[in-house]
Amino acid sequence: MKSIVQENWEECYLCGRNRTADPCGLEEHHIFEGNPGRKLSEKYGLKIHICGERCHRNGAESVHKNKLVRRTVQAAGQKAFEKVHGTREDFYRLFGRYYD
Image 1 (cartoon, one colour):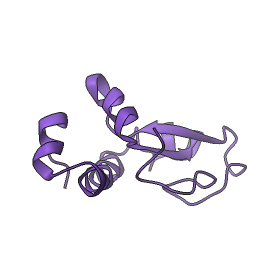
Image 2 (cartoon, rainbow, N blue to C red; image 1 turned 135 degrees about the vertical axis):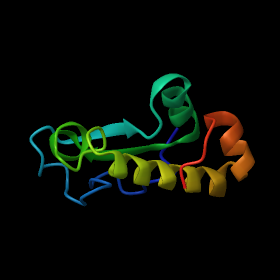
Image 3 (cartoon, rainbow, N blue to C red; image 1 turned 180 degrees about the vertical axis):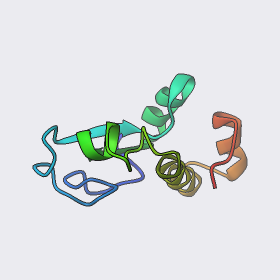
């Protein structure tokens, strides 16, 4: 499913750079990890494009290294889910917690 969180897939969701600014280009990131989080992220369009090296994996402010950044993205994912797919309770039933 197409992302419900990010419209422009030509720019990094976190820093706004275009795909050529990072040596790895832009990569798809599923907002909720693990099982079933990744599958649910795919099913409900809870994914973003971010710089592969800088914002995804290795930068100090990357979603995989910085808990505050990760939680901010997850809160945005929850908000988008509630706007498009259902209620706050529906989100909790699927994901098991709130992120806002």
